[in-house]
Length: 304
Image (tube, rainbow, N blue to C red; front, side, top):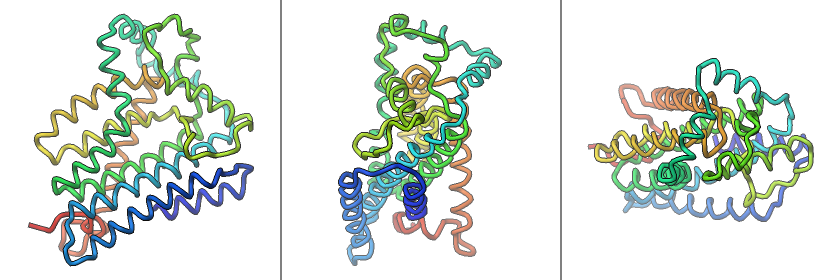
């Protein structure tokens, strides 16, 4: 899948006027390749330990996926299709969901803001932490499945966001920073800065170290929260912690990212599709009469 994403990315570069600051991409690819090669070597060695080689394999995979799909997100956003903020806001109102009331409730509670901010900002720390933890406790298969689910989710999210571009609910409601003085939605501000520059043709140089957020619908935070809860589930002592913390991250998503409630619901739907796809792929890859997928089994502890 990483190879396929790379091919699409290279084709997109050839067909558009986007350019790369190649040095950053080459450094990230080289480090990830070295890391993954060492993992493959450890997997093939006589003294292979699944806890070690799983960690060495899944981490560079997710780094490469994130780099390539985030870059493709910029190219996709340059399609400059009509903005859908008004429709997304109308959908929220159809459901009876009032962002302004929710914003005022949170803005009046500084302690709640601190909790929501920590949960919201934990998205990447959780991903890498879960991959390491799952690998080290012998849940290598689930670590590999999480990488695959995030990959599928990122691809689907990028595709939908291309067709349904939006900036965010703060702008749609005409809200000014003074009206939410206790909150600083940095991800929303990043989208507000980056997306117009991509859409009008100003941004055409991709730098892997400066890639920002240009996706609003569906919410990647909501997608991630659902996938992290699912990934935690095989570890009994981690279930409650993962469920509570990622429920808080879901609650923080509209505020931190300027997301419509529709974005959150769409992100959860994409997560469900991703988990279903992972299960289907695993079933198709499983050898006859075997319940575990062949390719994912490579990243699993020895069968007991």
